[in-house]
Image (cartoon, rainbow, N blue to C red):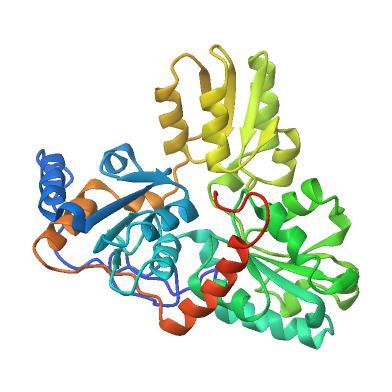
Length: 391
């Protein structure tokens, strides 16, 4: 088994329905070298007409994003899909948990398609429902479960969202994590604790920098250690229990690169996503969601310099869109989201042409009970005050 307790699957073969890494892509893909791929995609789109609605996540390649009807982050796109009830097919150019959210929020007659089922999320993989249920039992055995409220980041499976729904918890995005955590801490009196899933960095940065908790009040629950590797004394003292998960892209950014760039570039603005490590966030000038990053760069004055800590496809797109600004990537090496990049032009063409020919492929379906329970947690988020509708 791997370090995230997943079976090893040969690329493009086999599947694990409980994992974000299900990899089944039936049929023959057109070769990436086919010079007609763009024309084929447009032709399939035209044939499908208003029956088709294509969603493109900000981290997608340019070759894919050009075909999107709307672009955005995960929750924004799911809500955009829900706002198009007449679209029969929702093609989600993103990753698996995003397509699940779209299926939860769209109508029963709408079909959500993920062009490549291998497009998962390593962060979401780090919190599997069996692990979380086991941790919940351990918290009960430690005598603290009654005062714990689970909060899950949008970047989690439908099963984890459902767990939060049936256990009094809530979903959050990167822009409303502060509001969601503040709500959670009010649910069970002054002794309330929060179990934050699955990204420890977003949970830590929000609790410490936004809500004023100390690092000593944060503990990390490691699902691969007995009782999470946390002693009863540490649990009793903790206010926030952080699941040991992280984003494989945002976790790469380091504080020493910030120091190097500041030494080279005068008046540098460092802009990072809250999924970055705590020491990186502390050294940044601005921290915010993907939508916040885009808006900040759009509104920045000409001639300003920006080092941006988020996925490279987006940083490159911002650089190309704003040639009057000095925009650079906050890492020494190229760092794409490898699973997001599974959605390439051949997979998109394959999916669209199959749909145009009447073949439903790669449909993402959440079972009715999981959908109902996940919707409870999502609705709690929507009912929160303040910023709640944007990642």
